[in-house]
Length: 142
Image (cartoon, rainbow, N blue to C red):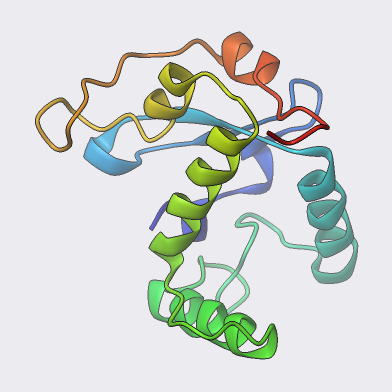
């Protein structure tokens, strides 16, 4: 799970991108950083003052474990009153659905996970970070 390995330096607030290193398939990629998420991460930084990893583990030095992250995800879903089981992978599907409903080009959405061809129905092409930055959801939604 890439989120537990994020470091403070992976957040690029100037370009509004998050760099995910050594993600699925051992590849690096960029994902969009929304202004809302940036504010949440800034608040988190002010409160937690993480040294290296954005979400440190119990020892405050190493990253949070995937088990800790799963538990936090389940607790948050329960507190939010969501009726169904929510796993961290659910967030990836929800994000893609939100982008599609916001009229983001499907080719940009397909490129975000950057899976290797053959793992799903489409071939995923590389999308440059500038195209990801330009692909912001519209305010009108659909």
